[in-house]
Length: 135
Image 1 (cartoon, helix red, strand yellow):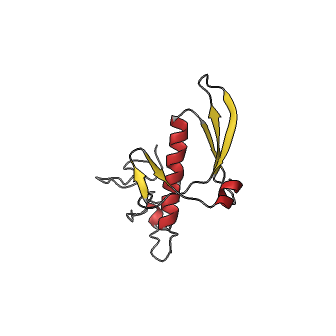
Image 2 (cartoon, one colour):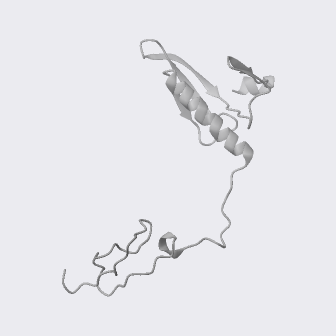
Image 3 (cartoon, one colour):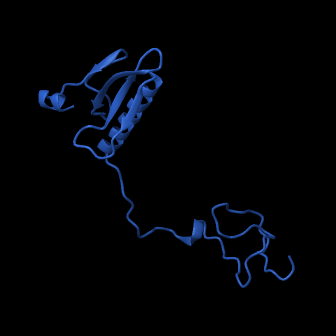
């Protein structure tokens, strides 16, 4: 369009850059900015980013594993965002894909490297009686 500024040509275009592609019209009065290698020119050099602990990563993986296993088995799993030790509920579905009218509360535990007694056919995780009664 005549009269609109156009970005200078460039052989490569960074899709995360705010610099427009060669020949792309810019809004009136605006010039193309030089690419900084980071979208918007922000480097984050002085920002401390949050991290997850080894235990949190193990817990997230365990919850994802349980969610997939429950779904693959044809049952319904629901995660609870705020809890006092119960991460979710599993509602069982019968062979006719109807609710079996039976559900359990779940507490997911996931070690970083596996349970102490684990094989291809199962694992053993011991729990206190009080926790089991609560679940």
